[in-house]
Amino acid sequence: AIVLGIETSCDETGVGVVRMRADGHVELLADEVASSVDEHARFGGVVPEVASRAHLEAMVPTVQRAMTVANVKESDVDAVAVTAGPGLAGALLVGVAAAKAYATAWGVPLYGVNHLSAHVAVDTLEHGPLPGPALALLVSGGHSSLLEVDDLAGPVTQLGATIDDAAGEAFDKIARVLGLPFPGGPYIDRAAREGDPEAIAFPRGLTGPRDPAYDFSFAGLKTAVARWVENEERVGRSIPVADVAASFQEAVADVLTAKTVRAARDKGVDQLVIGGGVAANSRLRSMAEQRCADAGIHLRVPRPKLCTDNGAMVAALGSHLLAANVPESSLDIPANPGLFVSEIVMP
Ligand code: ATP
Ligand code: MG
Ligand code: FE
Image 1 (cartoon, helix red, strand yellow):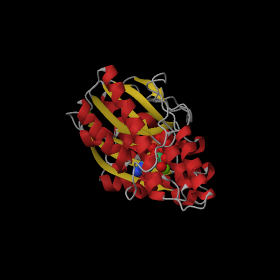
Image 2 (image 1 turned 180 degrees about the vertical axis):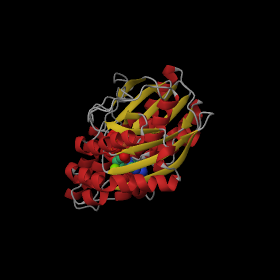
Image 3 (image 1 turned 120 degrees about the horizontal axis):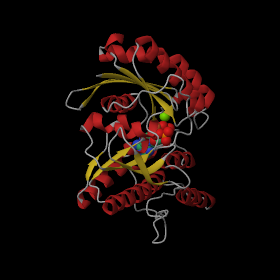
């Protein structure tokens, strides 16, 4: 079966095309992304109105490009999946409206899916079917959650989540403190390569014996880094950007991997998927690899391009829903900016 996926929850207009084979493997046929990131950069964050307008302009051309690259015709498509939430309301509306139009015109089922589940499901494009039960660490621009997943088309349980900032948000804020461009994650990652991760001992939030085991907190770390930088400036020292970036990144990777490995042990689960934009981080990937190997956990992290927002992840989730005979979404579904992580597909 061939599924087309549309993603417009933030500033990426993503359209992906996948094919699910009879053996349950999902093949990536196209992954086209048009980003409006350059239009937001000078504001230091995504401007919702600008993002919506950019989606409207990019939507149809991106669908056409994806179908050309995938070499599929309209009549080949068996279902259309779209991110119904969470995300920016106006941005989501563009994708949802387009998906309804395509599904109606082509006479195929529509799946209005959860963006966060899609960040997890995308891994099957690279590593094959997910043998459940698994743990998923979802770390992105707006979320940081630890999830229990049995089956990509079935229920998800949230074990814990950030109580303040998301991991990606912390990367973006620290990048701003260091004078690096937006979005900051990739720039911190690059700067950190030249730095010493042990140069500065930044705090590891919520890792005390009485703290909740599976929740995260990055606000304290963010404040500690900002204060450290301010202090250096006050006394007239130049900021060792690479060392700050490396030490900050080390703190984030340390907390995320330590808590996740502990959760896997507690739950007796030996499969771990990491997804979301921050999963592209090179230190998080290397630390997770090492700690999972030590703990006997089988780690799955998709290649960096599939970690950040794209349409292929939505198509991948759609193909699992179709294969599991999950009922299609109704054609009057709204966009749901606050869709909770446990709601995989809107009825
Ligand atoms: P959400 O998925 O929560 O709705 P989003 O879709 O805006 O949020 P993603 O595209 O999944 O977020 O991820 C974007 C985030 O990932 C940004 O905060 C960005 O800085 C971060 N990021 C991207 N690459 C890296 C990297 N190499 N290292 C660290 N962070 C990164
Ligand atoms: Mg983005
Ligand atoms: Fe995302």
